[in-house]
Image (tube, rainbow, N blue to C red; front, side):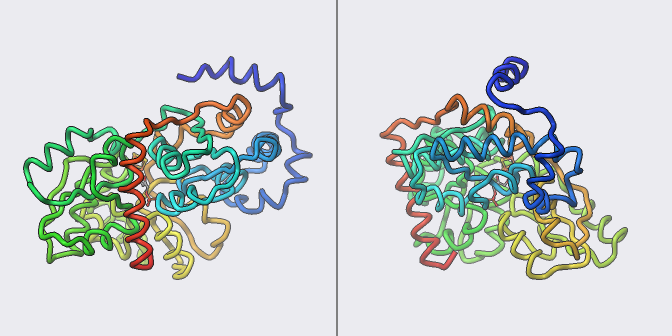
Length: 350
Ligand code: 13P
Ligand code: SF4
């Protein structure tokens, strides 16, 4: 648990973090990437943190990998690489710097450590978890194997290293269909996201897909009726849903894809009005690059992703906390499952 007052006191002894309109003005090029969604007053607050982090990042030879759900100040201000879970995992294998700061949730930092074990991987808040990762343990995988003997286990990357280690192969929302359809098996176990599994099942009708009963607390909140209402109130709106949403929600959408798939779709289609049925920061992060698109709500916030803030990133790099460690034996088994996914995914061009 963070002791915010003491962290702030300690940071103030080393950095000048007072709101600074002059520095904010000097950093106008960075601000231009988020000026539709961040006010000049807020930018004057963020700019000293962004400047301090970018300087410290060089001193520590660190690389910041940021998920698409990070807030615009992180996404546009300090990230070296942004992307969905698959892109971040692939990028983690290529990092040559000494340190990776994972601006995302814990399973993403663990995946980076598994794929690039000689780097120090920091997560700015250890409590940045995930409801899907919390929903299953390695015992749950064993339970599924006992229930469906011989069926391969495809595990979503939104899981702990122990769960990955107990699985045959991983998948992300961007390659789940490709991975499942390439497996030489009639029955496939998908864990832990029941909605992703049900959405994949619809696209791979030749296989019997069975699933674990997990869900994402952000995406499960949407209903098909929400989408129908928004279409009626905002005619012409293009609705784009993440595959962690329930299947009846995805069925109401015009397109479904991973977080980067959503960005690519909106960037190429440029609809007049778009509703992103996913975490709130997605629309904010692409808003300035797409002034012709009006993003209409509602959106839901991921409380875990939102634990990562500029001041915690600065603290993390300043103190080199919290380093993510994975038991080497578990890491090796988990790496096999993640690497199989990366290889199979590359084979199918994802
Ligand atoms: P993506 O792989 O689509 O970025 O999804 C990760 C995630 O946690 C979505 O909730
Ligand atoms: Fe996990 Fe859902 Fe948050 Fe993604 S949005 S990190 S799946 S809780």
